[in-house]
Image (cartoon, rainbow, N blue to C red; front, side):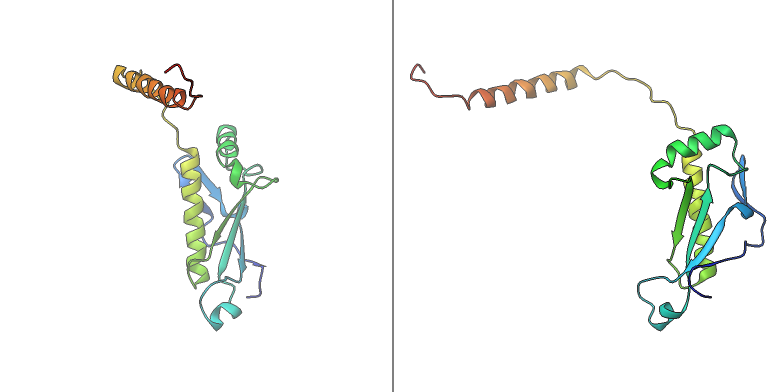
Length: 153
């Protein structure tokens, strides 16, 4: 295949992320490009690296709550249009890289959508407070010793 060629969608029509989310494969855009790294002449002639792109903002598979959570959680991984890009070049096989990209997308979305447990507030132990005060007093003494030396001592 030539570099940067779009690939047809896989056989299965849905990519199952969780019980509550399945992405239609028609929303996923795959592109095969030439991979770098070792591989000899094979690397120079084969487009085995897979770039998977999925738009979080325009996806019909997401509920409003899911979309909001993904946009917040994955903000650093999204471009300005809301596209999430996953790249896989681990294998010399285009098919294996495609499966790896799908798996990485499923893991990323699963982690982003996971409900976080609320932190339960606890009190600092008395020993920790006393140790902090002791350290502050010690540090203050060290700084006091740095002052000017006078003839009164």
